[in-house]
Length: 261
Ligand code: GLP
Image (tube, rainbow, N blue to C red):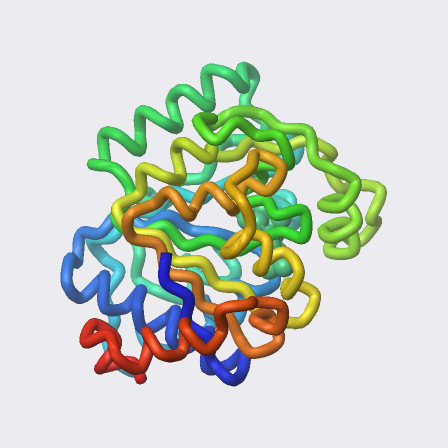
């Protein structure tokens, strides 16, 4: 795992966007694993700007999102499908037929999850998986006690997650209490992982995810097992990390990061 600490949220978001852009330029037919949440809204705005101003070309990209709420019709404004259409897919030249999210209102959810995993495999697996982190330590919707070997499946959401996300619904009580999510095992198969976390409210969970022991109680700790995972945080989210000086030193000295400093 590598940890990169940027002084501001804006700079952290820009760095994450530049790494995604570099992936797409290196391999135009990349399969991207995408995430939702407030943190990603700014990142998608930067990617849309890169498309508009610098010709960043999504035309050959495929995408698979981490998760989707169960039980909402696909065109409900609160689905992650609607979120993705609004913040990214409508703003870049990705072919909408190449964008995938699990269908949270499928009649047979187990079958839907199995087919979602198959579609990912048929597309050659995820080249770059983007991740946020929930206050419960979840990646995707892998709530505490999710098996570190789990695959795409239905999960009940914890009260912490419901409290975090319900305010995004016009009527908070309407927030579904279950979701389909890629499993931790699914996520770990991505060739490269990029986590972005900003703001003081993420400081405790980032410290646990990066420096804590690996445990299914905090599914993000499983990222410590991944051979190529980069965690980008701003100063506020890095506040509780013990190894800050060391992480800065690596970023300054590692040739891989020369273009990004
Ligand atoms: C939701 C998503 C997670 C995401 C989290 C972070 O719960 N399922 O994948 O990491 O939101 O949200 P925010 O960026 O709003 O803090």
